[in-house]
Image 1 (cartoon, rainbow, N blue to C red):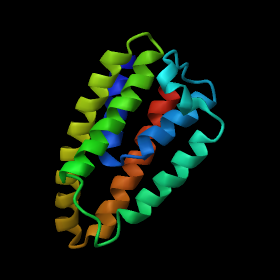
Image 2 (image 1 turned 90 degrees about the horizontal axis):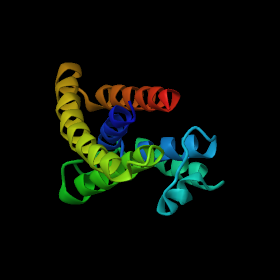
Image 3 (image 1 turned 90 degrees about the vertical axis):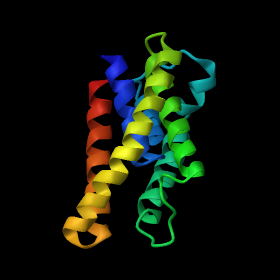
Image 4 (image 1 turned 60 degrees about the vertical axis):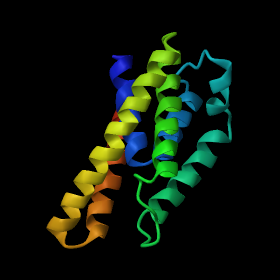
Length: 152
């Protein structure tokens, strides 16, 4: 079950790079996720979920700007993979499988990045406007992240 959740949180990171770590930080802060790995402990610090949530909100707003580059540019793609790997590692570490979780999170991030871009492009064509497509993508990412947290 945790393997599937690690993969799915990676998909969320592919959709919104900062939403996934914000969700994981809240899970760690509330004690829903036990982080055994010392390098992941910062996710459970008191200020981390607040800071990551603020950054995630900024990402949600920035994503709608016409000057925002594609998520498939190398820096943005790499950031999404790193985010997915980190979040997957956090989920995997709670079961002593941090490396497996990181790999699954990274794979999920690739799927989420490419699949999310394709889905959003199709929705934007259907709406003849990108904004509704972006808002739908936001809603799906937030709802899915919430469901993943509840499954932990």
